[in-house]
Length: 249
Length: 279
Image 1 (cartoon, rainbow over the protein chains, first blue to last red):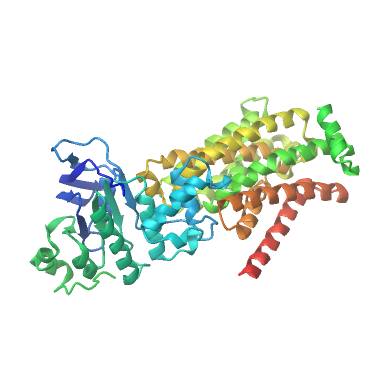
Image 2: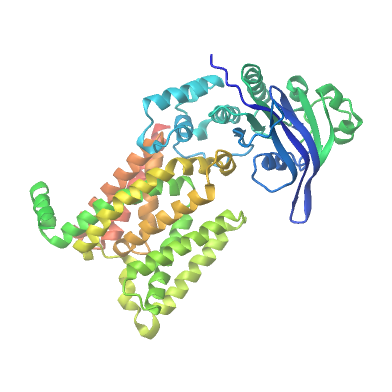
């Protein structure tokens, strides 16, 4: 199998702050996101997790620096980012299949004229990659939350990203769905070369899957291995004496 | 033009098509409805029915302003104002304000009122009343030439913008992360709809233009299972409603625009039944 090797080694966030409408959304966030690791962001609602992702994606202006560093310590100008958003806002009644949707980003040919054989095969491979081969002809609106998440993951992996950013939905995906998703992500982490940043609300699964955990509350309260973070006083002050169960509503 | 008429006489030896005004109307339907049917698919999926309705209303102001500014061509005035208006609504939509509906409604009624005030000065509105209901029997050969040029250009632009627009309609932030300039794509779509609406509005009328954009696509959506089917069904329904409505209007001696829309509405009702039955 062809193994994609990204040039990236890690992403350095140094003193990243975001202010909007007189409010501080992120204050002086410094952290690393390493290739070959699953880095998980946790925190209460409104802690700035999605804001941090938007700053990483370049969607909103920020102070401080975000550097993409290669293995020789040089800055990389271009970074391919795959992104799975938390919210999708489409009309569930629209007659657009998973195949149409994926094909629309793989080819310039407008999908209302149909999808060619080559692209169909590409779509099939992309879906098989995330255990979603059976969804090809399902309309997007008929997919469950977990299925949609996998479809979005398939999309995020094409073209092969250096950085994969996963903003997990707060609701709509049950734990089995999340487990399936995280198993897939873990397999990707082990077989391909990329950095993965996940925002998660399911603390029990975070504990199970994360290589590096960052607890955010406008700034980084604590970061380290899952055990280090979960046993810290900062974790307890945010989530109570954490059992690792879901805390957020 | 005579050659085209001769071909039509040979292919469609119908009593109703004896007259050249009916031939012109028939050709106009063939040229206009496919583009509206195609664009309608995204207007429906992107939940922009209300927006395109407001866009149609702005034609009145466009003509009014054209008269004030002394422009010779109504079409030019409508096109320019329609495009400006479309970009304006697009920017409002993108500002993320929660009350987009309300803002569009305010703009829509303001533009109707402003247009009416200009057009009704000195009690002359009757001259413009065809603008409200349209008159497809007034299509001239020059109009047809213009439409024949506009159709392929419109379809080509639509082909270029569809995929990025689809991604944007599923998730703007996802689309942006993939390098799509979502604001530009959305505005380009809105402008294309504005141009198509303004081209059609003289024949279909301000009151009914939106139905022609939305109904075939809404009916097609009830029957389609994927993007291609949606486009095909929508175009076929738009064409069929256009042709059938035109002949009905001829037979019953009534408004062509209204007959076309009624046929499209009937198809929509049928599509709803079919959809229920299939479930």
